[in-house]
Length: 406
Image 1 (cartoon, rainbow, N blue to C red):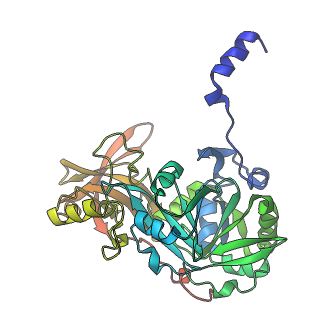
Image 2 (image 1 turned 90 degrees about the vertical axis):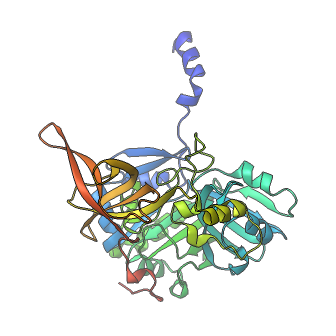
Image 3 (image 1 turned 135 degrees about the vertical axis):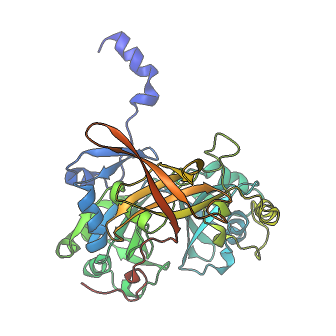
């Protein structure tokens, strides 16, 4: 290497620095046929493993393993942990029992959503908060005055999502006795070698599924334990593209995809309140004061909410991702944030952010503008759209306790 090249590479350290590999990367790399990777929180993560279409059907007809290790994980402990988290999040943490999981969100003082995620109550004064974005500085600043300890454990705890109708049977075959008693949003700890794995009945697919958390040193042995047990139950590894299709069918939202987080917004009008992204049901106005409470209630009282997130069913079978939504074919009233042709619902579905009163008081005469490739030419198509409830797909097996065996 010449001195000049070495100097240039040194000056591009932020570019040349390789992506970190998750604890499960050695197994994913062995299985990967597409070599299709992207960056998730600085980690190398797969878009796909072998075929996105087939990976999606693994979720819906057998079982799929998805590496969730890059997800941000914060451990919050101490005598004031409950009071601290109740001050930060929208739901009443006092109602969260030990061994339960709560889907929640948190806002800044202006009532704009900073992120959404899951809160695990491991013990009376011991919580784990999992989310999409990094929040350690904000969490530490918010902890002033509370007797709590906030630690990031993203790099010391590995995570797997095991999703699909045969997921329960795989856990049983793997020897996790008692997992049949887990109800939705419930967790329990199970022995694994000389450590333990935390298993919760949660997921991001709208299907029967579980999430498993284990110390990084035990990650590969946990993978091998599940992989061996899953051979007769159709277990496959999947990438994000297949998971994304399943989450859209379930009507779930993704930060900085379906809404811009308060810290990620470059313009003041890009932030969203809970009521503007379908999270109004999370807001517990009866609990003690929490971040953004006054701003949220003031916006409701004065009817100043500007946006609404809706589900759409669109004619035809061409996905309308990032399409502009029009009223009566002329006025732009919103944008599609996520869209697929749903193999399960057999419908062309989408999630869209609309400007009120459209989607609220005015819900008719909507259409989307789709550009479809036709013989080396893009053709503009205006397709009718109607507002429909989410989730687009509802599977009874998601809530059956105990789940069905295969």
